[in-house]
Every structure is written in structure tokens, then in C-alpha cells.
Image (tube, rainbow, N blue to C red; front, side, top):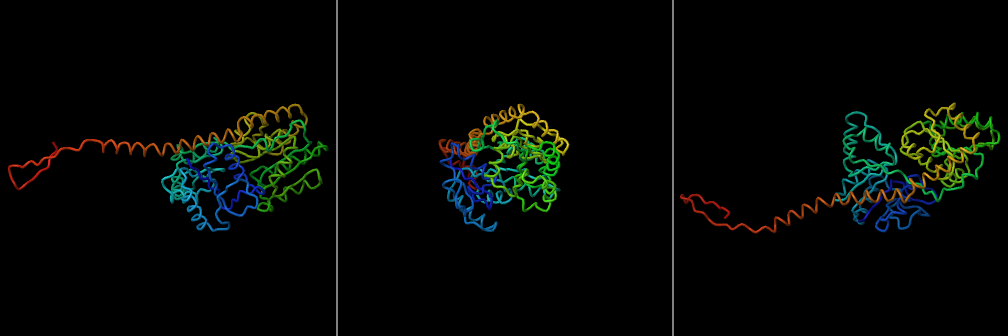
Length: 396
């Protein structure tokens, strides 16, 4: 069974600057039993590729030319199964161009609900191009099924993996550090967290905070005013703008407390998995897939506004025994449930099942044709009717 994994346009699978989708794809491939027969297609340009034997198309191509290049690459590889990560519209177009294979969309974020009839028809046409849609949590799958009930039976959930070995650190060896890792956006709960940190850091002068902010340049106009009140704490608050994965990992492995106060229903919440794997005690809003990421091993704040966050953070600061117990339990939970080996096995099983289901009807049809062909041919004779003006052919 041959597998092609198509990464989104712009993805180079670079070890130096991996994004979350690339990290997930790499983690799923490493322990896969289908790895010897899997090819990852991405853009060229990485000086230090994160994976060996990447199949690269030229970098910097426009949408149309990139689609042509990817289509030619898929045809040359001739896979039984093609898995497209994230992009719906372009992936659907490719799937329609390449019939005779299993086509799967691996969606890392939610698919927006349709707005009106035209939107629903457009989304319906795109979704119909795929044999299966994989979502990164049961919450995301259920949300999609409610928004697009016609495709509910095509939706599956496989939670994102976390490379625990690359993150793990001793939960008892911690700095008095509170860490936040996420995009600098309102929906991530950054504003109430900043308000809570003002109170907490005044109350506990031996504690510090680190804000690991992704995509900062895109959201700087909104974020800067929210961060400004924290300037009075000087180097007690480290603000990393567009933080690298290495920076996030280093801070999270030292943090005693991590906070994911998202206001939206997260597809899963990779930052929560990272916090658990690194050995930090987690405070979470629990929205969307965040509860699947943490199970019972987080302090859940249903309404992640400043007062509730202050209470939750203060509670963990004042109870170090509980804090360490939570961190240990969360770390063990992700090792057992979110390891790459567990998730890769689930994905491999789905891939094999889908290919088998596609092959089975063809095999049955061929078998029926063969059985019909094996039947003895009928013996024919001419029957002359009373009137020589008509002739009929009958089977004996």
C-alpha cells in the first residue's frame, strides 16, 4: 500500500522553523508501519529538512502552478491513498483531478459552518471530493457533523500526537514560572490572562511569567496595548514575539504552571499537550478539544476571565503538592494516550481500512464478471416460422 501525504502550500518541512501541522505530520510518520511506503510532498527550500526523502515541488509557485506540480508528483508516485493536510479548496480540486485513489482531508482546525445556500453548495462540492475527513479531536468531529450532517458518516477523529520524549522534564524541578503559549489574539484569552498576571505577580513577587506569542506581527496592533501594563514588571515578564518552537519548549519545560485560557472551541490544543508533556500543571478553559487533550488532569476555568484565572493560578501557587501531583498525572496521561505510536497506529488502521473498502467492490465486480464468463454458452438454432417473412433466433 502506497501513501502520499500532501502538505499545504508554503510548507517546507524545515527543522528550523516547523509549524504545528508539520510537527504533527512528522510525529505521525516516525512510528508508522506504513512509513517505508509513504512519501511526504512539500515545497522545496528547507536547508535542514525535518524528514529524510521528502518529495519537494518548486517553492514560490502560485496556486495553479503549484497544484499542477503536486498533481504530476502524485501521478508519478501512483499512491493508493492520498492524505491532504489542512487546505480544503485546493485539496478538493486535486482529489477530483486524480480519481481511482482514496482521498482524505486531515483537518487541523475547524471547518467553518456554511453561511447561506450558496456557501453550503460550495462547501458541499468540496467535501464530496474526499472519501474521509479526519479531525484532531472528537469535539471537532462532532462540530463538523452538526454543521454538515450530509458528511457525518465520512468524518473520523484521531487526536494529535505529542513527541513526549522531546518535551519531557521532571515536574519536581521547576522555576516559579507561569507560561502562556499561543497566538497573540483575543480568542486565545491573552487579554484576561495579562490582567490576571498583574494581580498575581504583585501578590507573589518571587514568581515570573513568560508569554510565547505566535504570529505576533499579524496581531501586533491588537496585542501591544494588552501587553503594555506588564512592562512595569521588567524582566519578571518575558515576552517572546513570534517565538520559535525551541524557545517554547525551553520555557515550558521550566514552568511550574501553564495556562490555555482560550475562548473558542479549540480543535484540540497542541499547547495543552505540550504543557502536560513538559511536566507543567495546566489551567485550561476546556473548550472544544482541550478536554480531550487533558482529560481530568487540568484545572478547568469555565469562564476564563481575569478573576477566575487569578483564583486558579493562586490556588496552584499556594499548593505545590497538588501542583506537582497534577503535573505528574498529566504527563503520564499524554504518554499513554497521545504518544505518536498510539496515534500513528490509529491512522494506519484507518488508511488500510479505506483502501480495502475501495478495492473490495472492484474485486467483487471482477469476480462476478468472471463467473458470468465461465457459464456455458447457449446452443442456438434457427426456428422457421410458418411465414417465411419472419425469422426468430431462440436459445435451446
